[in-house]
Image (spheres, rainbow over the protein chains, first blue to last red):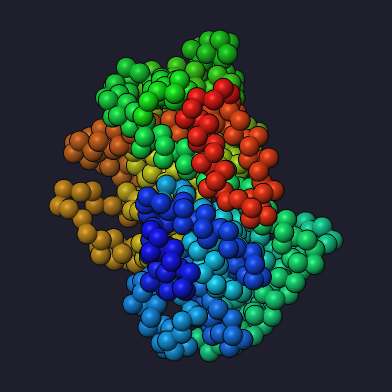
Length: 320
Length: 320
């Protein structure tokens, strides 16, 4: 543990990777590492950018282009790919390949894939915590790539300061979902693969859909851009839109307000996780659930009877 | 409360609606109502069928056709529409209209829309609980309609005995998601609006995708069907596939095994919810979070310090 923290201070990427694994698997001491990282946040104007969209929209290529652009400006970039379909998903090996190809071996780029299974609904919190580690380590832009246009996927991307939604002319279902108002708004809409038929139509549809939303006069007007990530077309404009949105957030006070809101939500999530771990790992709850499952399955008692009993034991300070 | 339980016994739909609201909003006494319902489950061979798919796939029309078919056989049908885009979503009024149009005013059909927001990730559990109420009330088929092809949406549909995924020839993103392995398998795949171009191609793609999955020899071979819900074409085949799957579940022992697995997951979820409610409503946790948010936002302490302190107080049995 001390070794990890020490390596972290030396900006050793191996220590960073180990710290991330510790947090991802919530192994002993993960909260200590996170508290350590937390104390180092918010000092260098680091920004978090969420990138989401349906599979096949070209998010990874777009991310790679953004990395190049940021690196061209001397900015350190960390990437979290919460995306089982991402070409990054192969882990370090593919991550290395991409770095080699596009920017050369570069100590100021770090790409990490995260598993999406078995996270018990805590994936948004874990992603924020891994982003903390990257920011504390010294990365100035944290890109968080998720896949899907459902509420859960967007919640993760929306833990960033700026959310980018990537669509392609074929994104029929995504557009249906947007129209249906299932999704919260993104800040920047990218029509990628815009050299394909239907791009202008899609751009128009997105603009109409955004036009129908109620917005207060001082709120951000979402940017709608066209890109061809494979050739790099439109990436400059995307970078500029990200800058504009960040300037808007700062100027309007919404950067601090948004971060505080997210922090409040997260503080509650961290408390709930700690309580959950205590209940299942250090009390008799797990044992009771196992003992009583047969009775519950047979209808002899209800889940609510069992829950009430466990709660009673917790309240009475029953020994673990 | 007693009035609700009494009305429930009399099979009064107003009492059922009130019981559902109580559970949905987790108001005082909701667990008592659920324990009451729980004791009445599993007696009449009731089955739960989850129906999911992207918006615009025609799930509601398909559901309406299934209702007609079940009613034709004298079977009582309850519907839960967890779908902000569903035409059912207008609530009782639209539900009534649909019943009037398609089956006449029928006391053995009940349609209920559920809100998807503000559910704190507990939507799958609440949906199962509302299904309990419907089953305990005497409905023999419970249809659970959700929208989306993300993991969260499918988790809800998968709390049923049989999961139906509805696609349309335009479902490009949905197919991408399926190919990417983001989703767990459904039991029955329906290509709806199959009179449109591309239906056969989609059916072929789904079949290829299913063929690539590893399956043990005794596992269910997913059915792939074409329907035109607006005309009723293929609904008979869908009904037959649902019967076949149920017979498979019974014959293979997977009906009981699946229900027991789901029950175990749910028992844990119910315990966690009870603990969460206790922590936030009956201890000083909420107050502490509010008091310390400024310090956490300023980086003077970490979320983990606050969580540790709250946990310490819970463990020591601090008074609420």
